[in-house]
Length: 422
Image 1: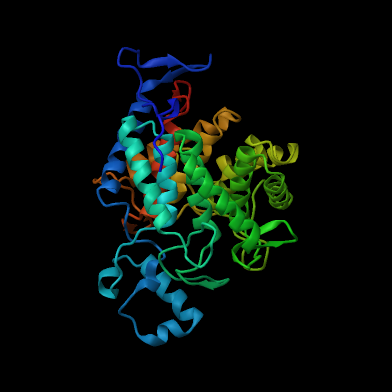
Image 2: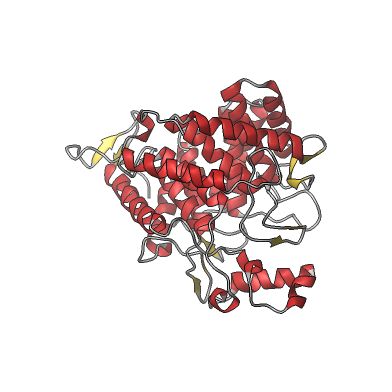
């Protein structure tokens, strides 16, 4: 990887010691500079705890990595789903008994790469060193079944829709990896990262099915219409189109994004997918869709329809999926489980919205306060979930720690808390 000089986007975002605690941002109300100090402190603790463990951890869905289960369990889809859910939902950690070891996920690396490219919480040369180390690890985790760069999970997956093995790439892991590559290119000036990301765009165009020639599927050859998966691909293609000027990437991003925008419900929400059994709405998948729509808008992909859909969706998200005290609801109808990724995604989505919807985005500070007070462990990492009667304190890097560090880096780059907020 060629060496490049650090750009201004890798400067430390902590406020000047000589500044007063209250300053003004963009001509608006007074802001609390101490809030950003808190963000930086939390991010540094999270980074220390995660980096020292090489970003490896258990995963909520790693049950099929079990080495000590009766063979009949693996002979049916229902058996594999039950094993996965037992490991995920048990009040006790079953992994030592079942022989499940911590693993490293490509999705984790992509999200952590985004965090270090944004920075705002580490000394610039340290962030750069971490970024380059993770880029090398990400390249080493590429799936070998395709020429183009693509990634999967480090465990087999059985869902209510399909099965795919750990050797198979999937849209979510590949998109997060490639979006991290784009951040490394755009924010840290690593041009080699762009080459890999362009290759990933080719993977999506050549190998992943598209429902109605528009909506990207979840797996190679698959065209199951799942909105967050489709929109993550569209966000990547939009950024690639802006970086390369390629019309085919822009057209694919445009048609895919309009597919999702036109299936927005009247209340501003989206279902998880467009087939029976996929009608639910949840917090973090809604956040994926919103962030991806915003990326398309920022890249000049699509038209006013996409921005209007984003505004309607953001209002639904802020009003129906985030409580006044910052608690991130799992679904509009249920606050439990209180999920670490829902908190991280809320901070990310609202931080991304700070320029275009500052009033709604102000809730990002309440979510940060809630996560810091109620979800943060003593070692600086964040719990997986809090349920009504017990906590799942498993510190999953893919599910919570990497999304949270990326979100905190985004939060540190926004105007600090308004003194008028509650």
